[in-house]
Image (tube, rainbow, N blue to C red):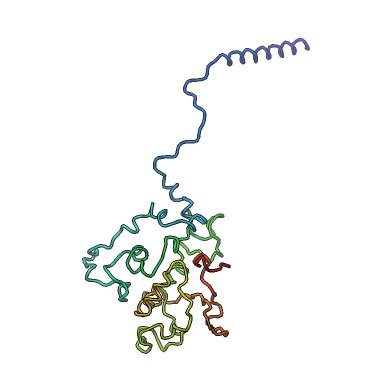
Amino acid sequence: MKQAFAAAALAAVVAIGFIAWIAADIPPRAEFVPYAEPAAPAERSYLQAAYSPLHFRPAIEAADDAQCLACHREVLDDKVRVDSPAGRKAELMRAWYQQTPTYAGEQDTFHRRHLVTPLAKQLMNLRCNTCHEGHDPREEAQGAAADSAQQADAGFTLRKQVNPETACLKCHGQFPWQLMGLPGPWDEHKAVFGNNCQTCHGAIRTKRHEVTYLNAAAIEEAGKTAADTCYGCHGGRAWYRISYPYARTPWPDMPAEVPEWAKNRPVQSEARFLKQTESKP
């Protein structure tokens, strides 16, 4: 029994040695190439573009317009049709945003009106990430996946790439004449105030427009000669039935008593829009 076991062990050792000797004498195959990371494709795929870090926080918070427009240039290149599908000529029609005389020029597209038109350059300083704060291209419904926005996330708006409550409403809400103690809507009673917002606001709530997405000095100067400059963003181009709850930033000689309607108002704008010279919370 012991002799048989020893013979089998010896045979195994000999076989292993023989295989090692054969393998050592075999040259490597000519087509063999060690593994290396594949080179990046000449053109990025849709998934690579959709899941770019620029579409998510924190990268989108520091993104500049050039980075966004590298892929989304069409938002500025697109133009309004000369003739509508119904045959109406744009030059003979007035759009809702042309109702106030501060808008000059022909009709224009949505993004161009906010970024490159004369009024936008004069009074605004909007950037792509002023409104677009990122989104999940895989699923834009709260709580749909473990890594998606949770149901309790009040800053998330279902199926939208912009939250209108914190972006659009800032400049497209109703004029809150009830809160301001006016007898009625501004366009019906502006003559009583000399069609001049500075009649009251020369001394009340004088600390305003000091955010990065507006040209505060230009707005204040234009408001001295044309109330429609103010009214355009404070009810003149309203999309919504409600007004935006602007921050009630303290101003010199501000009364100590806070009105009932202002008790829940913030005392400064969102931190991301504060100018660098202001202290952030």
